[in-house]
Length: 147
Image (cartoon, rainbow, N blue to C red):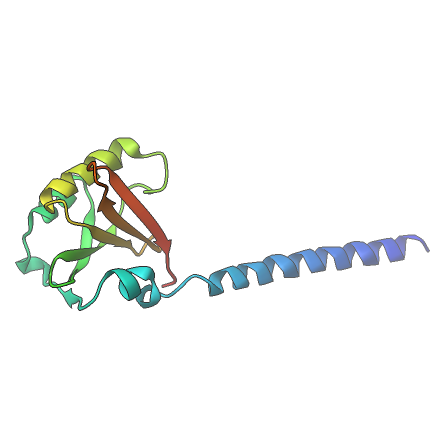
């Protein structure tokens, strides 16, 4: 007779834990904005225009190609001074990949004439906003979005 209350409370505890995990996941996703509601498109950029990739040949495209970053689309924003690249990245930009990303960011800095830009990675659902500090150091700001 002692086993049934124990099994019942064990089952109810497991059920409660599962519900908390599921509701926590749902709640967490509610705070991740859709792409158009991210800081990139609500605060950083304005007046974005789609680019026809086959006709668009800036120096940054050569850098992206050299580093194996596939560009699937692009926009020019802020009076055409701020490019937004939609990309497929080889490596996690938040991981231990400084040997890849630091040279890449420096090459992009030169190609984009020290101007900021952003990359939108649909595969990772991640936006990387890249700016440069007063001493030329790369500053990256990451933002998640929901597809």
